[in-house]
Image 1 (cartoon, rainbow, N blue to C red):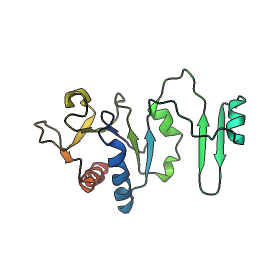
Image 2: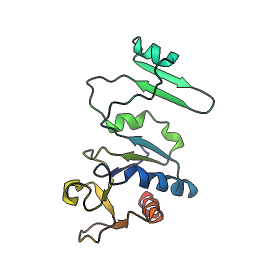
Image 3: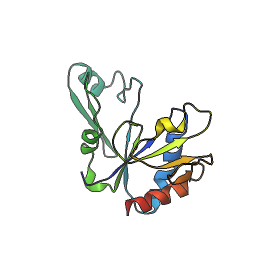
Length: 165
């Protein structure tokens, strides 16, 4: 896979989605086309109960694509299969992307920016592994990694642009 993966990892409630929501348009403004893979621990269904695609998937179709002129989505039934981040990313149209951002997947061996806020949950050390390339925080930490201000999305985006080079 030639398109780099960059994960944003943190405890729930730290602000991963909020930060990515601000960073993605900043990257786009600099010409960086990004995809996103988001991990969820919740039961999820993007299909609408009662609609044809939902009924056909529930009837036993293992994969369903719902498509319109504006977008398409692939739903794939994967009961009892472990998640594989690289396999998920390979399903994306990588020729149209410069970067795949990942929300979650904290145990995957991919480059990561760890987000941490005091009092949210756990300690910063619990988020760190050899794949963390920077920490976005609102604290002054004494760690030998680049510190990014979690409240300044432009600085985070600039770091990503430099990292991509």
